[in-house]
Image (tube, rainbow, N blue to C red; front, side, top):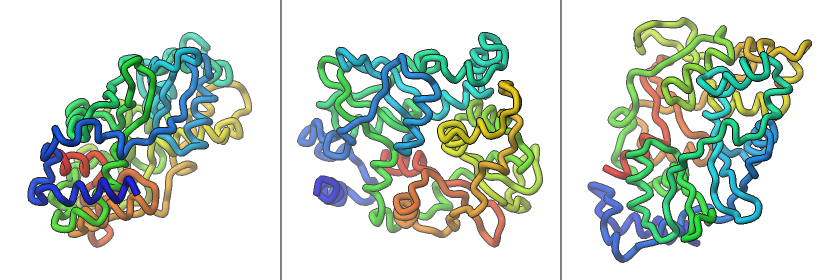
Length: 313
């Protein structure tokens, strides 16, 4: 019911610009109408492994970290934080230097070692407008919602807005909003390499093509799969990683090629697809982005972030 009411509210706004600014003062605090209120959290003493398992079990890309006593928000761990830990960035030093490549030892470090402490949040009294603006300007995929005591009261994500836009964006075409210069990788890429690409370029997914290219030539790229941050997280969170271990060396895990975890049956969009239909497809399949393919060739990629930018424009 709340979703239907919120969709009606969006439909009542100026369709030409989709401005959430309309009636902002009348809807102060309306972000709670689309937020998830029962938020799964973890204490900062939970291990990295436990956090990954919780995220995989609940199909989350992020997990707020709270103090068990006060329930105040202390930080957040995202799939990108875990990719950073797996070789994508500076957090890899925990595994490489502190634990000398001992994977089982490193993943039992407390999650506070890799969580993001400077969390972008909004207040329970804030509007949808503020949520959209903050997510787009700060480049974050979700915002924990806190009350006056900084206790977590909900969370709102890009996907919440994608769900709202399903069937509403009927005039906008994918080709006008997709990213055309797509960073790709090849089937032989290792998990460590894929993690680096994602962390350094702030990407949650990479199309996998048959031939690696230094410069984008989309007209010649044949897509053979897609690997996402969630795929790598599941590899860790479902304990698949341990099946590859003979010793305790992290190198055994990180040398796993993405062919073992990537999705080879890729759900795609066409350049002429309507954004509203793409939103429907994202909702139905539970995915956050689609490669854009024409005549079997990779032309671009459209993501939840792109949909949010349409909403905020």
